[in-house]
Image 1 (spheres, one colour):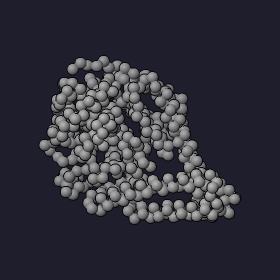
Image 2: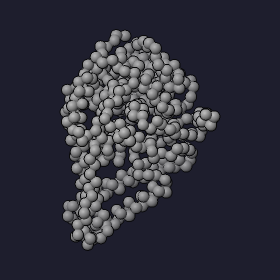
Image 3: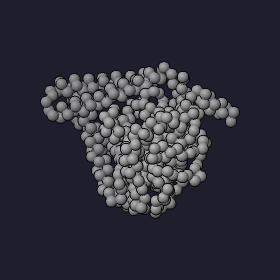
Image 4: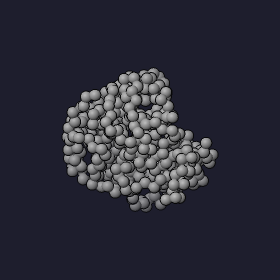
Length: 240
Length: 69
Length: 122
């Protein structure tokens, strides 16, 4: 018998009408140290990644969102009770720090697609026909790299501009920039609950200011992108 | 034990599902070594979004269900 | 447990706002289209997994070499003959890698390493 773990919350919490979890299993609260963990008991070795299970996982984590901010676990966390207790007791300070970081916040997600991807097609210069295949190859690579560098600079500019736009209303951010792809930027923002509306307004303004950038705004989410204690654990205890 | 990976047909235009998967699959707390979604034992391989992993018994069950519906 | 004051009621499902649904669907499911409909995990696939790993690293290094070669060419310290030789060698390296990818049934998109918080290798 193993435990499927959804999320961790601080203090003793009560659940009213918890939704069903993965594989339609019931969800219960397990108090561990000063925390409480939402779990389901499962008999399997692996959890199938299906549409229903993925949605159920998120539904369970988000079911506590109206009263507290949880630290979500990644989908598929299936452990014994002992492994769970051991994990928590050895990382208690890091978990407390992480909970403090996300307290009173939710995650808002912004993704940007840019519509102009220059292919940098250029006419071959006459002098190049005198070059050998190797030299031509290098010249073409050079042109491509120039294009890449330019895109990277543009992507960095977009990232900086977005950060400035939301700087007054976010507590933290996790941003990934991919200059060579259409989905040039994917950002997760930690936003205090009282500032959600202002955040949405700022993103709406940003979208209007730059019509060539296509925005996707989603949320509120539980703070999946900010639930991360591994780095801190390793740094503090020198474990790799 | 042989692991069979079966890929379900996702509702491909479900943006809400894709966004949810983007959150629950790649982020969140990890109890090292205990994530049971794996294409192989090599974690470095990027896992596509529509991969379903199950033990042999469960996979057979899924396939059996498909045949009868 | 005390209730924290909430300005907006948090919904049971995530809210998604975008004027460009199809574009984002296309981008978010981009990787999934390259997967075959059924994969058997056995010895062969572990081999393929290792091949992916090795070829990804070689691809990474190959790109670095290309960049270095271009810098040196721009820097003007290579003779035309050297540029030609360097270019040909890199062309052959790229062709060889394509051959290896084909042998293992790997597409360009298959070669990458997700390094978690640090991002992807390529």
